[in-house]
Length: 200
Image (cartoon, rainbow, N blue to C red; front, top):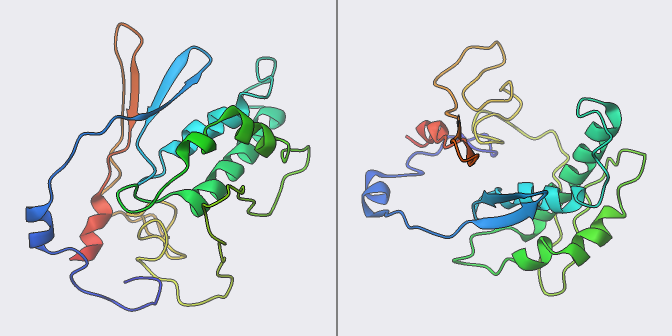
């Protein structure tokens, strides 16, 4: 099932998996307050976190309660800006050029940061980088949304997790782990792929 409301068989076939081989790539990194944060490339949404940090770097968060409204407001508004850029600029770098150096640069994020005010924005506001990006057209009609629509099998039928229905019934679950070693190195990963069951 996809956003058309129709079922389609064979999104992935056994041969697709048999011919696939993983590759090793250097992570994208961003240094923030003494930590080097590593994420995947722009073939996924990992770099959004790095840009969120680049935007937040310009705010004095030290005196703010991390559960208070000011901290949450700044975090959410910076998240909106980074996710808007994801929608316009991200793609598989094997097929498209993605301006990651600009998206993580101090100059670019200083300009983007000016959009954060005391008021929450309800608009999607991607940035502008000459030669990159495209106009994002939001679908606002109430077309048929069903399992398979959204991230990645949620749509209006789900409760927020791809394997959880509206009534809370589950089929599988998300996999997540956090590890911290004695040297203070940390990893937080959600290597889920359980939604691939929808491509049978």
